[in-house]
Length: 522
Image 1 (cartoon, rainbow, N blue to C red):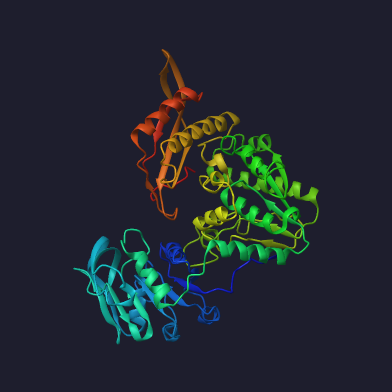
Image 2: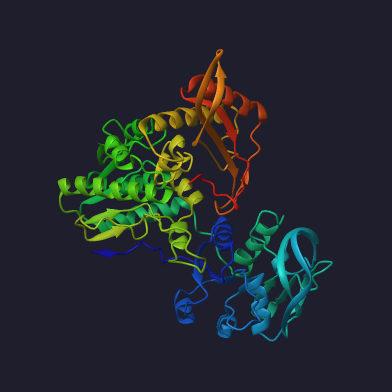
């Protein structure tokens, strides 16, 4: 068995070199929004490898260290002598100055938050940017002296070098974060760098990605048989449709309904991909609800629940795969954040061991893995889905964890509790959509707490469960703030859940941000 991701190499690209900053994925996403393909690599990546990729530009990210400390992350000075435009952000800016002969010291005044920046709009980096603009600062060190041949092009009241440039070598250093939304004109600055300074044509678009991918898949698969584990989520659905468009009936999709999906979701997946759907593929639905409930009986620890659900999913999938026999390729819906967060790209800490990166069924007999979405961020996956003609309701489906409702039910999972959370969640999503705010909230769902309390309904005493409602706004799902759902909507949802969902007598609204909380409950 070999794993060979279908990387796209015949295109212009900008490379992000990651020094451990929390916004590394956001930098790459902002570059891609300029229609320029972008990948993230660790600062430990050898410069020969960077050169071999022939990037049009390089961006150095922020990071938590002080660049002047011993053993701080660094890079070969040669990077700035390659004749390729380089943009340093925050730590990346300080490192550029230090390596090229400038000076970085502990700042007398730490800057954090939205800050007014005065800049030189004659710089190519700040073309069409207002001379006074609001930017997001986050630094305890500062550039006290610029490197030779650099000119200061921006400052704040407390930061004498908010940006500097060496125009002859196309080297730019920015002390603030242009990639975050708090920097009002940050997108313009990044556009100026990648499109104007680096000279990228902006050819990275979903229509060309879809067309190229279909041709590549067709060529790779030939007459082979392909197997896909279809969860019904956005990633696996887009991957399945992409494969179906390329190879049709050579594709078999196995959909394991573990009984932990949202209300009616299993039937909705079958409606799209089954015999009555519009796609030419072989669809197998396995109704394994009771099997999963039995395995989860008596289990309350969240991580143990995750492991049981993941392990059982693979066992069921293996059993179905054996019935099919030998296949040539296994399709996975891995997307780019999975790769980065699993420690396979960039420098950030491993956040999760994702089931699509490495957690493969051992007993399925196949030659190679195809990961057609491995290069895409979530918003790009959705664009690809629309390009493929997948129904809006599936493309814009709410994010859903692999273990499903198993981690939205605190404590033991039972069929009764699944029914409660399915019904409560369906009401919540229905009312959010009815209010017209479904596209303006990053993620929202109902969860079932393990708390039972006394209530009064119809003059009778009750002792029932409490449902918690969650709604957050987020750009990258790494940080999130509680969404301000209209009060009248919450009141309607509360009233409907208590009246229509048996076993519930209280409804809470979770105000916690991430950090310190997580988006999911377990």
